[in-house]
Length: 212
Image (cartoon, rainbow, N blue to C red; front, side):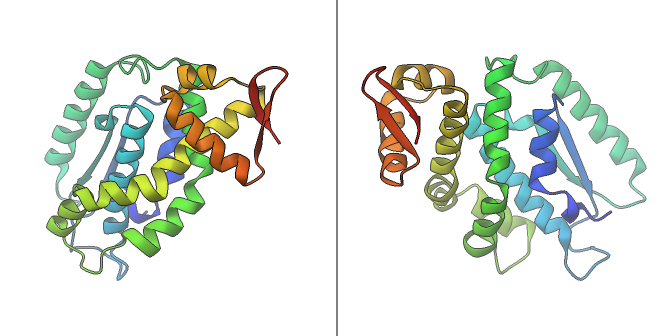
């Protein structure tokens, strides 16, 4: 299977199901067996997913991608052994990051809900016209990408987490802030936006936000 078929949702679902690490193996860049060069799609997905993980408070080293040929058996063994040691040193997902299992699942499920939207903005705003390892590295580690991520994805990730949390029961700003690790000012900003869109309301009687 082409590594380009490894959808962002597959990676997030694996973490949501409790996997401590995800390893993606693909053919060497610029040596794709298909004209689509899907391994570059896998590379961009990996960069974006690592950024999502950072945003959620997860160690991005839990995700790794490696490009190799069918003749690179020794390299595959070395890389997978190294990755296994790394994941063992990190421990169970969420533990080293200080995130409890319930909060972790909520964060990952919130990210998964946005995958169709993320696919769209990646295609329209983040896809590079030139396919090269250096070009991808330079773009996805740049301040320009960080700004795009915050504008297009980061804010929606926070809002998605809040919406899932409010599905369970009404919550105060303080409670949301404590559960999600967001500042009260961030919560207020997202609540104001969601309120204008008719998604949430503030219940004066219980001093909490609830779904509209």
